Every structure is written in C-alpha cells, then in structure tokens.
Image (cartoon, rainbow, N blue to C red; front, side):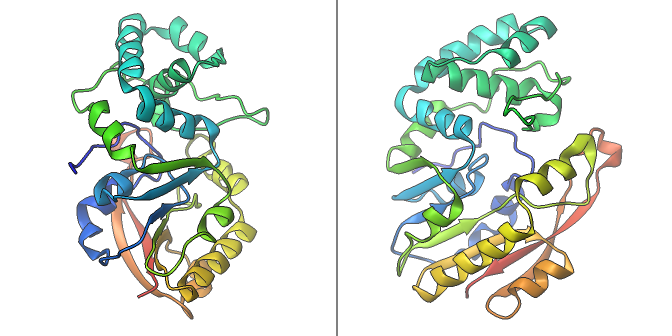
Length: 267
C-alpha cells in the first residue's frame, strides 16, 4: 500500500511524528486502532491492513466515510468550490448544514482549507465558527483521494468515545492514541477549546483505558503534552520519552517555535 499525504490540516496533527518517529512502532499482527482520528496522519503512515478509526467529531468521520465510498464525487465538488471561493461563499458554506454525504464531506474539506489556520472549533451549539483565513487553494497538488479511498477500504469508521473503541483491543493489536491536549498556545481560544473538549478527568480515563489494553496484550503508543501532571500519570506503567516538534498553530510564522511532547509506549 502506498503512502498518502493527509488531506486535512489539523491542530495537533501528527505529520511530524510520521516523519521522525514512525520507525519506532513495533511489528504487530493484529488490528490498528486510532480512537482520536484527526487528520489520520499516523494511519496513513502505518498503512494497516485492518483498522478501526474513531472520533467524536461526526463531520470528520462522515468526511472520511464519503471519500471511502465516493471519492470522485467529493473531488468534483471541491473543484467547483475552488472556482466559487470568496468571502461571501465561505460564510455561506460555513452556515450551511448539508445532508448529502458527498456535499457534507466537500464542505468540511473546503472549510478546513480556507478557514483561519485550519483550526476546527465549534460554538456551544455545535456550529463551526472559525473565520475565513488567507489561503485560497481549495484543490491541492498533493490531493490523491483515490489513494485515500483505497487505504480506507479495510478500515471501520465510527463516531465513538475512545473508551468504547480501546476496550475492543486484544492481544496483538496496536493502539495509537493522540488525544486533544492543552498546549502552550492560547491562540484564538484554542487553549480554552481543548480544555473544554478534553479535561483532566478524560486524561485519567484515557490512561486507565490504555493500561487495561496493555494488560490485555495490546501494543500502546500515545502522545501527549510534556507536563509534570501527564508525566506523573504515566510514569509508573508506561515508558515516556520527551521529544520536540515545531509549533504550527500560531497565526504568524514569527510566533511559532518548538514545543515539547511526550511519546508514551507500553514497551
């Protein structure tokens, strides 16, 4: 199976992990589990033959599902949106609530590529509320939705809380868990958004789930913020390693620096 470049830009995305640390994943014979799908960068890097991909974001899962089933329809709409892109069109699309799977997916990708810095954020009503950004390219040279569709053929896509997904893992399976976590950034509400989305109780619940999966014989790899509380949470039962990666969420490149993250493994 071929390598595929993620078609979404995602805050906290793991392209840096794929480029620098993918060779650290051990060989495994079972299924691949990713309970926080996001852009799917690690899935596309590992290219598993069997996968269970999950996220609580229904629009995200619907987008992956539409590409899996009808990538040509999604691509055709994106080309149309590329021609129509403008400030009025962006806000019209942001306000829309399409029901068609293909239109829903194309809208999601369009907004992701033209909103402010690719940030996904919703208000208390669940409505996407990120303003328009500076990027104008809706169709990218790196797009290969045919390839993405083929890679997804043997993947199960589900809208689910991480616990229901992780507890399905058995001996020989591999879990990659990349939860939302608070970084040093507070750009445009991103810090507050993540705190509301995934709080400390969720962090503890995730650790407990991963520990049980480890006891069941699954290989576990998780990433998280390099902070004393997270270190303390995992140090007894897991191996932790601190790494640096470039920050990409800041509005201007002059405000971006290096961020420390933890790679947490069961081996």
